Length: 201
Ligand code: ADP
Image 1 (cartoon, rainbow, N blue to C red):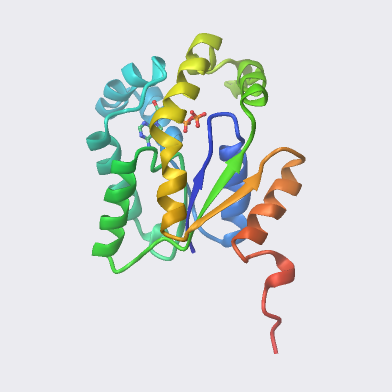
Image 2 (image 1 turned 135 degrees about the vertical axis):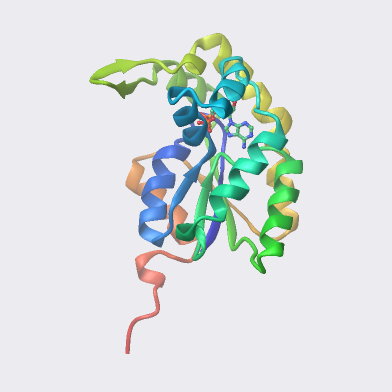
């Protein structure tokens, strides 16, 4: 299965991406995680991306698209994938469609996690991650950057919802609730819930 997970910062994409990808048996590919790994590894890509990330802006499409193409060409992504955080602009979505078409592939579905904005600000401002045994705040989770990221989302990424809807690929799911509940809704939307599996024999 080839799936895109869409949703604003703070909707729980990272968490759901891991769980859903495990259940589908495909790798979860997060552009945010790849960028962050490059930033900590102080690679050239990381140094370029950090400037944009710290400001809460999108990394330019040419950098991001090339990175994703490389990642999708790896063996583990041949049989499917779940993309988290990509595409984030209509241009990225069009380039993804082309890259997949070149490989004779296409997306099977797009899941949009829906959470209202007050809840997002509350979640992001309180969010901490564990790094080297310490709970730290991501540089881009500071309140002023959070507001800017939500603005960037509304402006550049939210239009993808209409783009994928017109392709007949979009399912919107309520992302408020327990993690397992949201996963259940996601798998059901993809037609991959346990109860929907064709029984053997
Ligand atoms: P969140 O969904 O919480 O905003 P991510 O981990 O997906 O966080 O992304 C963190 C940052 O990485 C973004 O704010 C952006 O700067 C950069 N980034 C991630 N994915 C993309 C993308 N597809 N295009 C451009 N920039 C991206």
